[in-house]
Amino acid sequence: MITLRVNGSTLETDSDPETPLLYVLRDDMELNGAKFGCGLGQCGSCTVLADNMPIFSCLTPIAMLADRDITTLEGLGSIDAPGPVQRAFIEEQAAQCGYCIPGMIMRAHALLMKNSAPDEAAIRDALEPSLCRCGTHMRILRAVRRASEGFQEQTSAARERNR
Image (cartoon, rainbow, N blue to C red; front, side, top):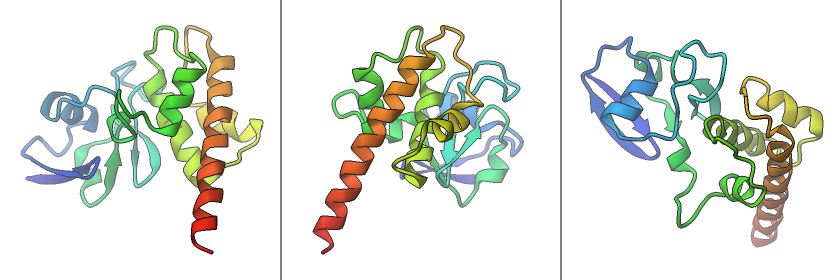
């Protein structure tokens, strides 16, 4: 039995320890934000966060994730209350087919958690492992810059409250 912490909830699973996290998320937890794209860690559509670091859930066996905090797209917000990165992607209409977007959002969120004011090179570097075949790269970059502004405002507000 392996215990996973996903989006603040605990799941005990008797799945084979070598089972990729993606299948447990989608099949057992019904969290369908992470997508199966290539199964090889080359497209990024399956990206989730483990301890705020992006990982390819299609490649990562659940045995490696015990005692780690896993965050999926669903853990960042909801349809009614999207998180700042999700909201920025919506406002910039960054999705065309939308298949890559969950992974892009997760990578952008991880970047902004570390650096709320990344430059263009840092954004491109963070998103590089994710592949968008529709060519919405410019809208995706605008969405991350917009989300960055929201993260900076939150950081400033938090500093003010702590004074």
